[in-house]
Image (cartoon, each protein chain N blue to C red):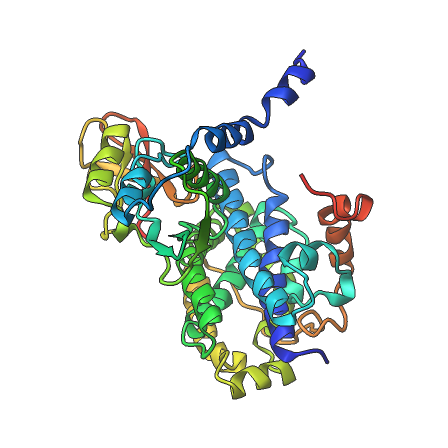
Length: 181
Length: 251
């Protein structure tokens, strides 16, 4: 039987982390440049595909200072993607940890996110991880495991909104394909 | 009538909300794993779009209601979804036929809506088009596969088409709210989309070896809110259960 007491006490880990970050982040004496902030953001992993970062994914659209407030503009990948709120929490946690006190996260849906915004480094990391990167042709170039080009679609939808399920007919391994949108 | 723009946004958001909830009823019980995942993904997209539509509706209304308030604190008579989306799931075939009939309208309508004079509406439409393109591709493939499948699957798809056909016409009806939107360049005239919808539908049904019912009689009353089918009330008792039992509960 699961010990509910333990489970509940462990549940708000993210919140605890957020609190800790607030305490650790010493107040900054001067505003970091937007380039510095971009660098901080570039090491925050995507919560569902942790091999790529938020900047690899291309969902950070803008970073700017509005007076003493840092404004970070984020675009959702899919309108119902449950990772969106975790992503916002991760950004907030990281930036607070770097001492940012006044922070606004702005949601922007236009122009809509497109897989064209994935960086080349992000595409390569996806492939190494076993997820075929998106292609305008509408399907994977080859199996991310054995590189065979003999692949077939199993389903238009996969384990997260951004992926489809494919299979290699040579090595017979199923794999995720990052949908091109 | 309340502000036509608010009414209009509720129509858009209630369509995706009610269909999203219906489709989510398949979660964990679909015939095969891939279909279960696909249905859950489709439901998720629709609920995501609902947050955008009803969020904007609440903003336009200006009475402090957000998307959650509109979704969970209204009763049957306040809902503005078309009757098609509240129809019960039936078997997997009927669920996919309902999806197919809706997706064809939804995609064409959203594409037209990307040219809206209202930037926020155009942005939501542009975002949704990408997701709905996948929905339509899949529902079309499934209707063809099952229609032109076994004797059993064909019979079930033909039954589904005949049962749901009388609910198709409502998506293309135009009324005072539509007229107000058309006049301001906010939304297209739904009646203008019927011709292309039928042409596309005829081609796909032919491929699926299914026969479109000859009678074009249509049930109506969902998008105006005048007369929903009995099914909507049952959906709401499930969907709104938590907020009805524990008003304003959060976690």
